[in-house]
Image (cartoon, rainbow, N blue to C red; front, side, top):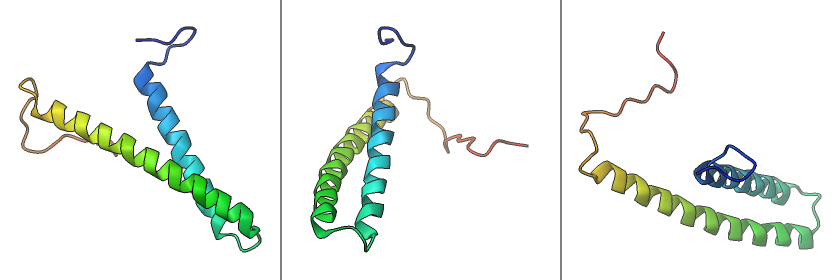
Length: 90
């Protein structure tokens, strides 16, 4: 299903949102590690990071559940090993 005025599906939008939140979490981790960051700012970054980490974990659990459903569906083709052409065959 395409969003109004765009070509992205809601799944693609969710993935982008996930990736953006993950990037934000990484940025917060970098901020906390800086020795020049005031304690209050570091504490705020830590608090935001904990909330983000929990929401990302929840999303990952949902994704894992969907994958398990897809793999266990009667329509799933049985393969000895998954074909993941991550690096391309030459």
